[in-house]
Image (cartoon, rainbow, N blue to C red):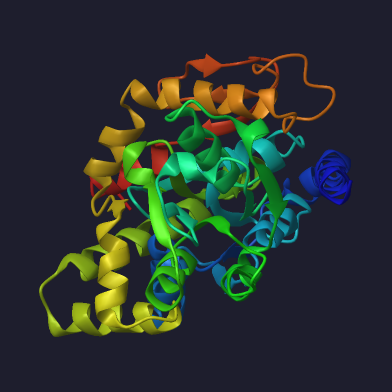
Length: 356
């Protein structure tokens, strides 16, 4: 009953907000805010803010950009959807299910990586994946963890009816896991690695078994991006400068990685382990290869079908194609008259050409 209410409240809030939020975005301006939460592939956002890289790129285009860390992932998406931020770091699935399904036209500015082991299912008493049958599984409901769990269950002939989902904030995941009644969690790094390192449990499935499906991106309000291309240029420029630094074999790179590790609550070895489970696109060219691969269309179709089957696209959604998803080649999956999620390669293409 409580979980159903939480789901309805989240979706109702998303549906109720777009008109006011959208109109607030449709303007040329100079001050912007984007938000992010702790995750291995998103730690560069904190570093580029603290190091001054973001300011350098913002100054280049005569704007101000504040990159804000929020502690609760779903809350960050809700605040973006409500118009409190111009952009937000989130996954492809969450972008489709919350802002896009709620009517907030959103662009995938930087599809920075995909999870290649950073999401996992832990069973406190161990065993194999099939052992999860009959257990409660704590996860962030409506998030990619829900999708990840369903995909995991399918591989052993199980479905959600064989387990019970317990909605849990990502901010509480580690502490909740330590309580006796918790037997299974589906979560992501750094919570995943912290639980495995410090508490009893066994990893029985991770996202490396579904590569390319859990995409971690910086999403920007489409109207904001259209009216203020300087924002897209500054964010993309700062992002790839930071990733280039991370990939360099220099003392500065080591210092940057150590800073990111500390900010994520681990040491350098721990953070490097998380990065090893993250398919991070260090160059614009690598990112473009990923977003122009035909598999992306298949992935988004699969995600939309999952959302529809679970009622996450909203009670009024007539089919998985309720929300249109536009790809870099201009093709659309879903309703072409209701495109609310767009993979926009234009700014990354500028970076690839050295045109920023």
